[in-house]
Image (spheres, rainbow, N blue to C red):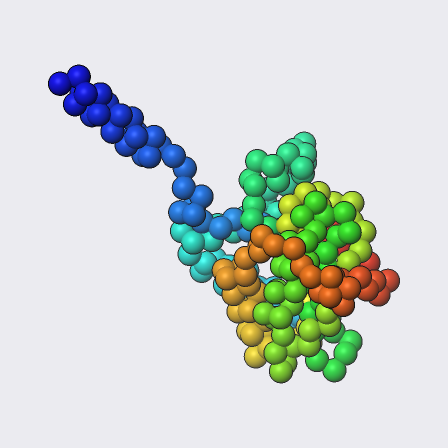
Length: 214
């Protein structure tokens, strides 16, 4: 009888531990989005508005999107502490500006000081590839200096998006950026030397040297 009771108690304890153990895989992915809007005219804002509208349609049960602007509204809070508390899968900073080239283009940038640089490089590579198309040129992956916590404390990618105010392409870019948030994940692996050498060691042009703004 003692053995039976002992067995039941062990089973009950196992069930209790099983019930209260957190399941990371069941939790939604958390992505912090920071938007840097350098578009000058009202007409140019379409792509940003479309992007924000589509973010609202993301299923929060699968992906929890937090806006960096909202998280840092209280200027007394330390950015590093905020990131530690939220513990996002990654930070995606998207900078919009007008393209002076023949068509829209994207460029992904990783901070040299990022604490998860290997993962950030792979993430940048996946994001840049996910955004390119016949209408959008992928200008590559670059690295630069950044002093901002959101660029360094967690996996993070800064994406420069240059647009030409073409409604159809704006729709495509907004949709692709949302697809990135929903489907592009951090890889727990080390990039090959070829990937780092080929895509991440180049320096961006002077006008793109600042990774992010607060």
